[in-house]
Image: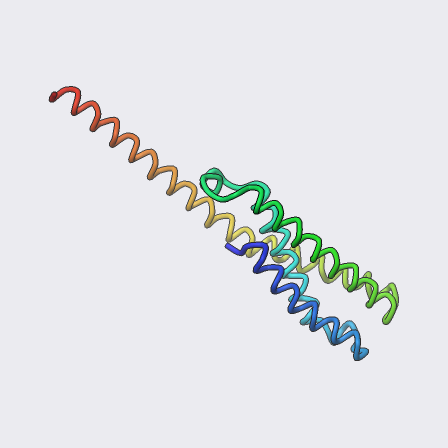
Length: 154
């Protein structure tokens, strides 16, 4: 499972490559790989942020809500700053139509990401939740049987 901080680090690396490409005047098409990496990392960040906002019952057992909220707030601001800066550079350097092209690429990558990788992560998390729930059930039933056995034999 990817966490928001890791996704933001990946987005920042891709963003720096895009920034450098814009500064030297590369075409948007030449920066396709960097844009794809950035879009994927942003999609990962959004997915991980959603998971932090709506944690499963297993994750709610530990961790500071305030610390996670503050960290998520700062990371979202960084993401928004990158996006605004990217929009300004691309629109100013290459024209507004290129920004629209980027949004189209980002949408396609996000949809692909959601369909494949995020579905895989969600299945894995559901298995872990079921396993944790089953384990808790077995422990509780075992404890109940032990309690009944002690009451009968004592």
